[in-house]
Length: 175
Image (tube, rainbow, N blue to C red; front, top):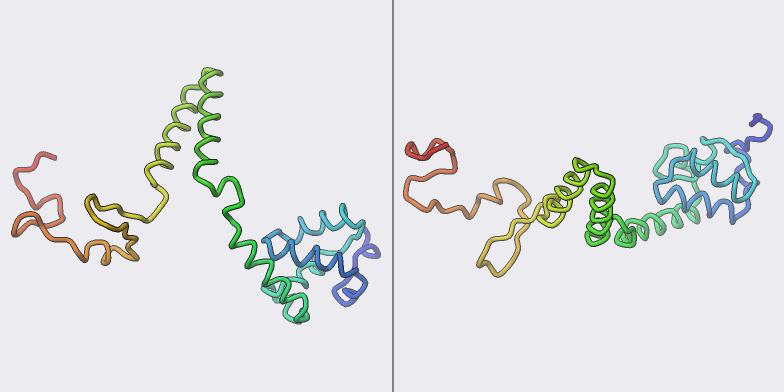
């Protein structure tokens, strides 16, 4: 790619509105400038530099002078993108479990029992909510999500007077 083929940020007006929209929306979806550049070339046959592409990202210093039209499009696209994360398959617990099931089954067919066990362990962690910050108290009416350890232990009442949370509190306990 020669420098004559690259469009500088000063000549940004040479991109069509469709190409600008394409660039802004992909940047808002956290696509790196290099990826957007490749997609722009494939989709529109246009070659511009990564720096010129960064000029369409208002979160980047190069995009600080971006017009309100493109800034508004960027913000709306970013908001929609973040809100619609549930549409991404891997963000869904059931989808992840189904994929892990297929991985475990295929690994077992191939005799790769170590991988099968890893997939089973991962599925158990998914089912046990190992990746959440939620604590379920049996018999309680609600599920709480503590914001800190202080919140987590705020309602702690020792079962026996003088008991503490430490391991060394019961000298007769077998460790």
